[in-house]
Length: 97
Image (cartoon, rainbow, N blue to C red; front, side, top):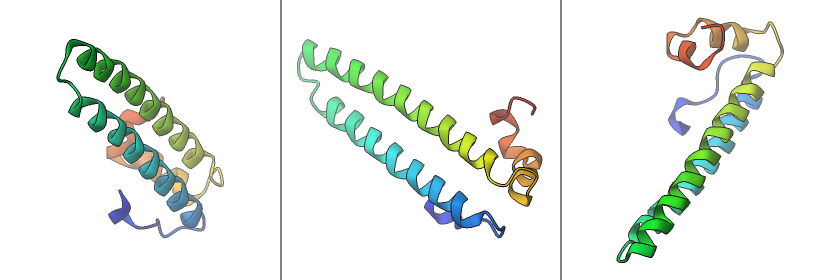
């Protein structure tokens, strides 16, 4: 995600900050999953990995939804909102797409 750069809009800096924060949050959750999965030498380790992974995936889902909400609220009616609504890759993420 970091390789995308910021959108060339007035709200680009805010959008980039939101995406950078999301990237950091997702990376933190991935580390938690990897750590739990690496400690699966016993049944309790496997159960812990499932619990940790489930919680991490739930957290990532919430983080993505929160970021999408933040991005949608940047200057309503702006170039960013229009681009978000028109991008084929975003259609599955919107309630109207």
